[in-house]
Length: 348
Image 1: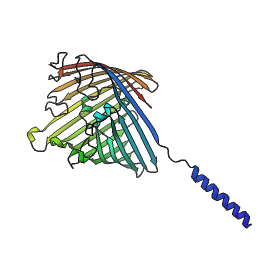
Image 2: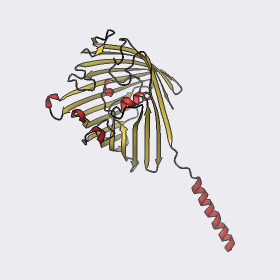
Image 3: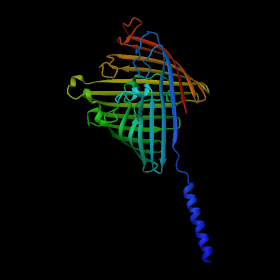
Image 4: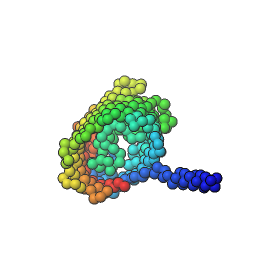
């Protein structure tokens, strides 16, 4: 009996050890994307466009290769987003200039299925358009996106109940991963109220705080993003953003800028769609990153042709300004700019 009991105990112990050794650990999930484009500006001028990532002329350009990794164990998770290329460098413009950038790196702890905390560096909650080209139907960017913010580094809390959510957080000065690099310990406060329905969504966003300590500027920005799917083929989007800029030392330098952007997307068939963007950008106080001193009406029409994970995007754009902020073919100031581009994106 003793021998039988010993054998049984040994079998149970061996079985338990084997089970512990073969229980698979949570896997790390990898994903990524890449993009490139060719652009021809009818002015024959480099840098004539005033929005992000497409400043070239008559040149094949690599945009960005992104590698993402995420891992979750229990209630904790980590997300790492690395970018390689000029698009990543422009996005993280306050970092040391190179073609390899940490776009996002953040840690999440889920206290419950409704409440979580996120700490680290994360893409902004402001605006309709996203950094990675594969996430947008238009390849070129809006003035609303170009004038940011781009990302925040700090901590935020999010509570979700059914279709509604609320987020609040405190971060370093906008677009700085380190307050030491910003030269300021001022903080930026961020918040969001969100609703996600079956055929549409709406978000009210706010950010307020130090955006550029070097020039002693603080910005409070209110932002609304909405989308609505009207049918299987047709959907609409809208982004309205309004920024109040305050100078720490001279109130005569205070001012504002705002942008109203409409988006329409129509699926011609399963792998072919058209995307149109109409934007009115007003910067009469010349306080945006573009320092326009007037207003711009932007029109962008893009075709998306999908072949598996590859998307080919022919695009034409025409911007008209109330002031001469562009250059013509003789490099003289003019009030309009037009170009065509052909982009490719791939996700994996």
